[in-house]
Length: 155
Image (cartoon, one colour):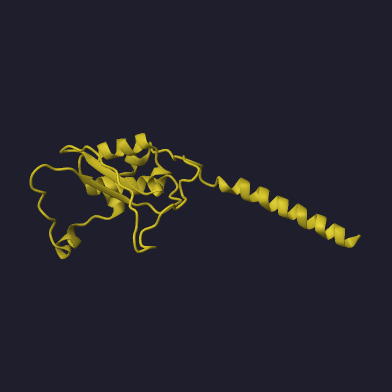
């Protein structure tokens, strides 16, 4: 992981003129593009992300929900944002039905994929609770400093 991965170097909307970072990619019909926050990429390794995308069988909703659940199952230390789209040739696919028709058919995140799919997902990065040793170390130093100060005042 990059040491400055969480440092914001540029933000949209802070000035009248914003310099936007762009990148041009050569894409072909059938390519799937994943845009995600570090809430996913810090929790789930790239090879696991690829495996889960392949396991979704081309269903972007299932793939996105599976990736979010995998990040949460791996610790979910940060907000998880996942955007998936497929490059298509010709006319786009038909639009989904209006929201009121979707409500009855929509499945929740817990219904999208079985836990068995997530069994092999391993956390990418520090393990759960890995901040405790550092916190205890800092507290021990503070306690020692307090004892030294208290002892020096007694003299």
